[in-house]
Every structure is written in C-alpha cells, then in structure tokens.
Image (cartoon, rainbow, N blue to C red):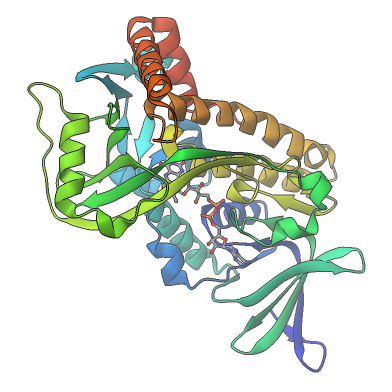
Length: 403
Ligand SMILES: Cc1cc2nc3c(=O)[nH]c(=O)nc-3n(C[C@H](O)[C@H](O)[C@H](O)COP(=O)(O)OP(=O)(O)OC[C@H]3O[C@@H](n4cnc5c(N)ncnc54)[C@H](O)[C@@H]3O)c2cc1C
C-alpha cells in the first residue's frame, strides 16, 4: 500500500522493484510471489499496449518447464502446438530435423501475446502490484538503496527497494545506473531485416519451415491452427508501405516453393518490418541493480531465442533472489556471470542460424555474394546429411540447460 510520507511524493518500500511489465518483468513477479518475496512492477505503457504487441512465438522446452513449475502453463498446454522438429530448406529441397528423435526434446509454438496474457491473468488473481501507464520512470539511489521514481495521474511516486531489476527491454532506463565502462555492450548489426505478417489462414505445414533462397530468407511459422505467421528477408531500409499483400505472397510463394507443396494464402491482418541486431552487455549486475531479458541482450529472431533468454535469466535471478532472502547471497553474486555464459552460447547459435539462412545485402560485391550463397548451400547440405550436425542444431534450438 502506498503512504503519503511527504507533501507531494507517494513513497513506498518493497523488497524488489521491477521496471518493465513485459514477459521478463511479469514472470519474475511470479517467481518472487511463489517465494513470498514482496515486489512492485512499474511499466510505462498501458496494459492494453503491452498485451497487443505481436512478437515471439516459439518456446523452448526449458521455458515451458519454467512456466509449468510456476503453475503458469495451463494455456500453453491447452492451446500450444508442440513441435518435434523443424524443416530446413534450400533450392527447393526440404529436410526435417527431428528434435524428438535426435535429442528427445520438443518446442511449443505459443504466441508471446498469449504468454503475456497468461502472466497478467495470474497476477490479477494474486492481486500483485503492477503499475501501468507510469510516466517519467526514473531509477536512482536513495541512501545506498535503489529507488524508482515515476508520475502517475499527475502525482509523483517513489518505490524504494532492496533490489532493482531492469526488465525494461533494449531501450530501457535501468541500464543508466550501470557505469558505461562496465556495461560496455558488444554489438553486431545485420544487413537484413524481417518483414513479418500474421495471416488468417491455416498453416500450410505442421512444422516451422526455415528457407534459404537466392532472393533471401523466408519462414513459415504459425500462431494457432487458423493463424499463420510468415516472414521474408528484406533490406533494413525497406518501407512497409512498399510491400503490398500481393507482393508479400509472391515473395513467400517463390522462396518457400518445393515441388508438390502449396502455400495457402489468406487475409493479412498485421505486417511490420523488424531490423536485426545482436547486442550483449558486459555485466548484468551492478551492486543492487540487475538486468534480465532484452534489457541485457538482444538477438536476431532466427534462432527464436529472445523470449526464451528472458525466461532463462528470470529463472536464474529469481532463484538467486530467493536464496539471498534465505541468507545465501552466493547465487546472486554469480548471477551475471552465469547469465552471460549461457547468453553467449545463445548468441553464437542465433548468429549461426542468421548467417546460415540469409543472403548478403546489395552492398556486397556480386562475386562475394555468390560465394557466400554457395557456402550457405554447402552448410545446409552438410546439416542435411549429418546426424551430428542435426543433433547440435536440435540441442540448441530446443534450449540449453538453465543453471
Ligand atoms: C518481431 C519480433 C519477433 C520476435 N520473435 C521472437 C521469437 O520467435 N522467439 C523469441 O524467443 N523471441 C522473439 N522476439 C524477441 C522477444 O519478443 C523479446 O526477446 C522479449 O519480448 C523480451 O522480453 P522482455 O520482457 O525482456 O522485454 P520486452 O518484451 O521488451 O518488455 C520490456 C517492457 O519494459 C517496458 N519499458 C521499457 N522502458 C520502460 C521504462 N522506461 N519504464 C517502464 N517500463 C519500460 C516496455 O514497455 C515493455 O513492456 C521477437 C521480437 C520481435 C520484435
């Protein structure tokens, strides 16, 4: 409960203040709630805005396990589509990487919007304190402890906490509390972007299709038995207005074509272009301040790792905060190193999948473009013919252990 301790600032104390009510922030709230640790989440967008964002769709087995352990998996058990593998494609040839047979694991296709809705509904049931629509959110320190200041309905608020967690995404404000020379992100920009669409049409495939084509990457994913999610590689400076629905379906038909298979078309209900970038900070912790999820690292979407990495960070940090509350601060002291060690393995896989399946941009000389394209074909054919290579893809795609 908020108390008005000074003339014009509503102050309150809690154990853990979390900035950002995306999947990372809300999931951390559930981990803490399960251990009886008080927390407050401060989000600058409205609840409807957060719920409306169309993003990730593939949950690693490890992510499903984390959600299930917290009793948050009813929706995904009911409506999630369990996939035992993926299809890789090049020059009109398609082959199956059978996760179940290769590593005994699966992934679940369940939209991030659904994950977000489930997390919100469970917080509603708990009566958690989640502030939406906070303005001027500003993290800082007061007497050596973190504090989050914000304005709500014109009134000023300050949440003092023992720990502050930045779950505020790539452009979040929590990072500002970590000195620049310690934060020191490593980054890579890609000369490709994804044009993604949602279409009201049943998927034309049972498994996700990742295709390399001379024109660029294409992917066929899905959100439900009646909604398809499809992507094509475009140049980073492409404008969505230049891509009519017909042009998008043409590109998809060309790039996903294999003999004897047809892509079903339907009304496109959403389309957007996302640039691709990799970025990893050098530390995920500084004093009593911690980062989780996109606040600390982002990946190109090709390996389906962004949301899954956020869930892995939260599982590790949540356990560490719980251990600290029980008198053991060891796991908290090693959180950043453990999270970054796992994250760099995830980064190299995301980069590997992105390089494998995308063609170079037009700035690359023609001979080199041809070389890189043929080299990628070589890699795909190697994977297609090697159980060892497929096992490696399967192990990484279905998710590394969370320790
Ligand atoms: C088009 C697209 C496709 C993707 N596909 C996949 C995929 O297939 N698989 C996958 O695993 N990942 C995918 N991702 C990545 C995935 O969506 C993110 O990694 C995931 O959302 C990270 O969760 P998060 O909670 O860390 O960050 P976010 O979801 O970004 O949440 C951060 C929250 O903090 C809030 N916030 C930001 N700044 C402030 C502030 N100053 N004050 C208060 N609140 C603030 C934001 O409003 C937001 O609600 C995709 C992303 C995009 C954009």
